[in-house]
Length: 249
Ligand SMILES: [Fe+2]
Image (cartoon, rainbow, N blue to C red; front, side):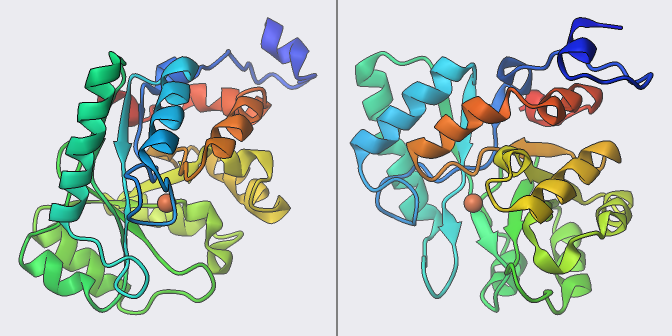
């Protein structure tokens, strides 16, 4: 029985080895471009968050501002210009963390035309981060998935565990993964940051190894303070059993 088994009082045969942020290497979900969504509201906030990302062991951050027609009508141009300003600041301060940008696309009526025009912001090898509303299940999902995949995009579903209508439906994540769709988990879901049922769903995804990516979904520096608590949890260390794609980016 290993040290972590004893630490977590695990009496089953399951062995849990320690896991660390440096093994994740790259965060793929955050809101760090100042002033364009509900994340960072200033360059100072962005730099403070990036300094903390670096201190915690991340090597790279792929930040994903919201693109949501009603609330945050961002464009690739707005996001990439914001990214350049952040990079200039990082460079002038001599910080080592790398930053790239993509987007978190909300599935609304403006998304399908953007897919057809192939104008989505991607990360890594054509990955696109997609989110749904939290309360009612998305309509026309088959059409969305078909259009994305036939346009050469690789789908990443943001924080699957947070969709209330899929609670208890890990089978849905398993089914999607069989179709080549990637599932992203918010690390702080493991802390109960979004409620006990979402924590349970996050743990079930890990137990079923039905996760491809993890993310911080960091909007404010407080989220990284919570992450310092998350990394003490048994289920964070169970991520060691999953071959996360974060580290390939
Ligand atoms: Fe997000």
